[in-house]
Image (cartoon, rainbow, N blue to C red; front, side, top):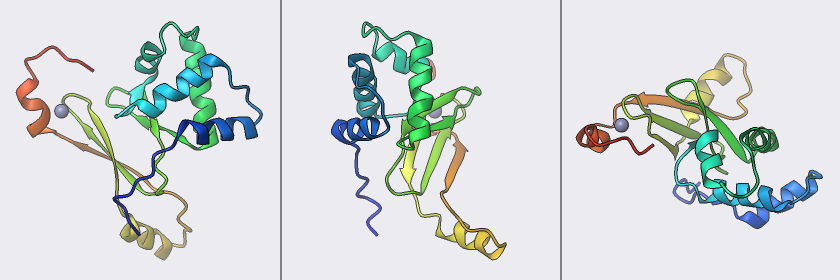
Length: 153
Ligand SMILES: [Zn+2]
């Protein structure tokens, strides 16, 4: 149990999984994987599309690939503040908490133990599989002072 060691996926790992699942590793798909691995916070499809601009991927192709990746299990879709879907790497530790700022929409994903929650649902007769928690919050110390700046996300 070392929650601080969140293991980052490497491009090679993802390529291996894509190959194993029968997907061709086209240059645009590689660019998309690279953009997702490089992202330091969850992004919506439009933001991801902007990062692979010039790689020959239109937005609908980006969407299609993103849902493929989510289906493969290494990418996760998180609901954003305005109903949009945000994409981030699924942490290898199964439990994570998404903290979302109600003011600026900024999202952070942090590893967190959900042992107490799992124990509670186990008492109800469920067999916990994976846990995803979204916590809405105000990131006062982070965005309150920059609220007058033009939004960058
Ligand atoms: Zn904020």
